[in-house]
Image 1: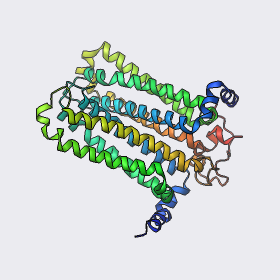
Image 2: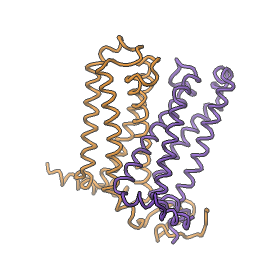
Image 3: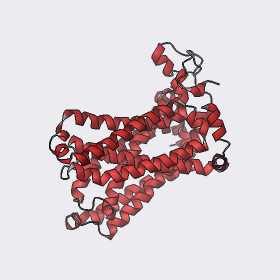
Image 4: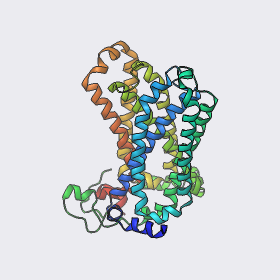
Length: 200
Length: 173
C-alpha cells in the first residue's frame, strides 16, 4: 500500500480536520501528552533507580512493580493515544521528520529492552527481590532504559521545534477561544480581544 | 511587564541564549520536562500512599522520606531551567496569561508540599494513625495532584496563549 496516500487520508479524516481547526484541541492534546509522558517517565525512573540500587533499596521489587507498573501502562496508553491524535493532524510532515523517526525507533528499542529484562533478571526475581539492587543484567537494562527515555523526551521536544513551530507562530485560526466560553458568541476575528479586561 | 520583558531580552545572558537558541532552548526545555517527570512521579507516589493505593508496606513518613528530597531537588531544577527560559525568551513567557496563572499554582502546589512535610515531621504519629484516614486529607491529596496537572497544562499553553482570547496580554499589541 502507498504510504503517502495512507498518510494523506489520515490528514483528511474528520477527526484530524477537527483537531486542526479547533483552537483549543491541539494545545490540550499536547498538554495531555506531557501529563502522560511525565507519569511514564516518573514511574519508570522509580523502578529503574530501584534496579540500580540507588533508591527504595530496602523495598521488595515485586511489591514495587505491582504498585507502580499498572500506572505506567495506563499513562503510556494515554500518551500513545494523544501522540496518535497529534500525528494524524500533520501525518506526512511527522512521518518524514528525522526526530520523529528516531523517537519511534527508541520506543521500539525500549520495548525490546523490557523484553530483555523479562528474559534475564526478570526470571530470577525471587532470588534478588529483597536485595538492594538487581543482578548485572537488570542494572544494564535499567541504565539503558533511563538513557532511552531521556532520549525520547529530547526527540519529542525537537519534533515540536521542527514541525509545529511554524503553526504556533502563525496568526491564531478563527475559531472558538476562551472568550466564547464566557460570552457564548463566536469570535469571528479569532483571538482579537472583544472586551478590554486587563489582568495585570 | 512588556517593558521589563523587552529590557530583559537585551541583557547579556538573554542575548547569549538567543544567539544559540536552536539548541539551547530545546535542551533547557527537555531538562525541564525530565524535572516535571520527577515532580509528578514523586507527588503521585506520595498521593497514592495517602489514598492507600500503593506503598502500603511503608509508613507515610518512610514514603515521604523516599520522595520528598527528589521532589525538592526536581523543583530546584525546574526553577533553574524555568528562569533560564524566561531570560532566553522574556516576551514569550512573561507577556502571557498562562505563565502567571501557572506561577500562582506553582506557589500553591509548593506551599502544600512544604506544609505537608513539616506537619508530618512534627505530628508523625497523628498523621500515621488518624489524619491519613480522614476523607478531607484524601481529597486534598487528589486536589494536589490535579493542581500539578493544571500546572503542566498551563506550561504548555504558554506557547498557545492566544487560546485565552482577551485574557491573554499577548493578543494586545
